[in-house]
Image (cartoon, rainbow, N blue to C red; front, top):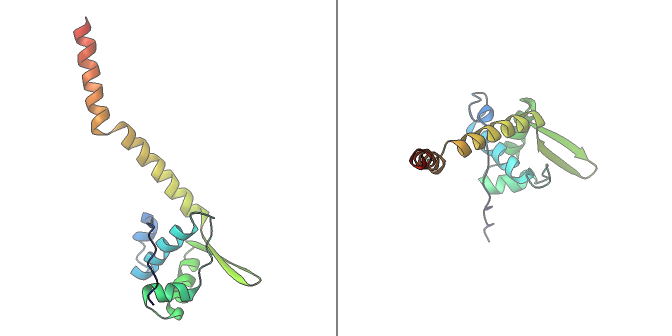
Length: 128
């Protein structure tokens, strides 16, 4: 029986996307870790989970995780019987700052707001 693919989306910040030292699969794994850790700020999926999801050997997943850790993009912690992985806070904070800036720009720079401002200016001129 085939395992169902997850139905969530992944965010990969530009620092990770354009890092020439990372492979495409490492970048994809970063997005997967980010998506899985959004709820609890960490995730504990095993290498086997990712290896079956991406149809690669568990050793490949282990190398990807180690490389992301060495580059400082993720933190890996071992707690008695399980491993937890979370996104490095500095990467998250950078992404949050960029998203807030983007959202503010969208709020003030969208078609409806611009049209409403023009109509408001016309209405004010016509009231006099």
